[in-house]
Length: 137
Image 1: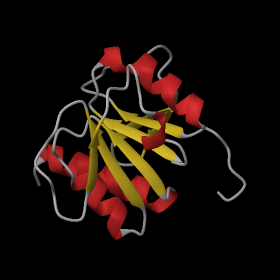
Image 2: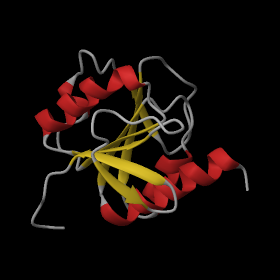
Image 3: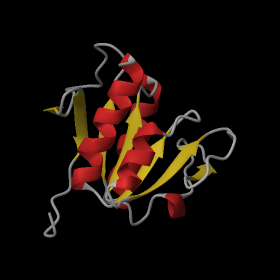
Image 4: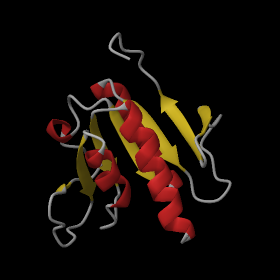
């Protein structure tokens, strides 16, 4: 199995089993995780700073997380990013905190930000930097 595809599939299954309204930040036109989350009954909005070709059945939009349009993220229970640049981390944490959403990150290589947040081994290593306990979970 392709390494990156395996990573994205594993993340999609983990998130899809736990969250219902998700936003993927910096998706880069790759929608493997988002498709799996949707197959599991969740909704996903894929956001990037630039436009990518439309993928049937996947909602996407353009936004800059350094100056985010909060309407894209408000109401989400999970914001996630797969291999974001480390420079994006302060903005991702601030955004998730502002809209009261969990933040899950799959880092590139052994990269972590600050203390690394809560480490989750779901078959790949995720880092939960913002975790807001909800009564429905």
